[in-house]
Image (tube, rainbow, N blue to C red; front, side, top):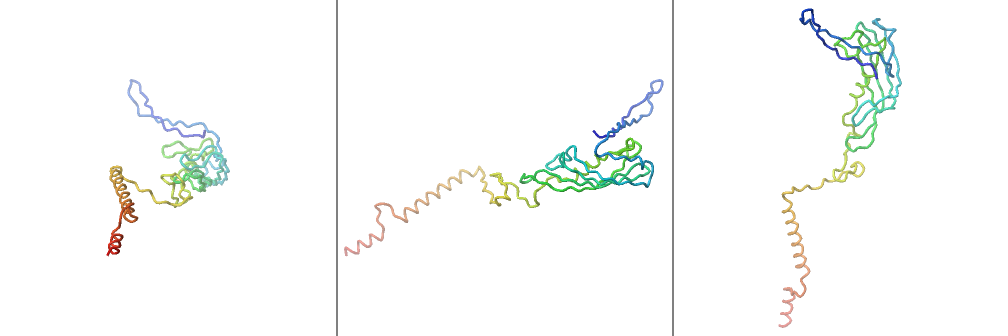
Length: 233
């Protein structure tokens, strides 16, 4: 695991007689551990104005990101780093480039998109609450800086395209493949009985209209009656 700075621990010393002295702040600095993101800075330590440039090609040891898209383990990560000596420490800046993979948040197909992000952080020589990172044994571990920059650059809700229509809410099909459809009419359950009654009335009306237009068996139309009277005359 990379080196980390442990938050200060406060304790209270007691003077002879049991009286408390002012609180004492203890900073626990972990032992330096080499990682793929580690760079030596021994040649520019305490030399303000000195600068060095490095290129890192890293096989990502663990996922960068934990949402629907991430730079996954085994993916290539290219990093251009610039180290600048300052009075307070080493300024680490540069650009990280990688390929993120995941799923579209709307239609759930696999997607990938490039990630290119800039970063800059100061690694201090002395432990202090003012700085989040420290120089350890003349080395700087860029992993937390690069990780934070990449993760913050990833989209919270990635999409395969800006106008992705998503999935059909009924069938679950991808609308981009089948085309958009009209949403089915949603009937309030409280009106279901009236809807059924209307359907039945419409069906009965259709049957009645059919009987009138085609004539019922054995029925005599007014036109046939008139013709019969005319012949008898």
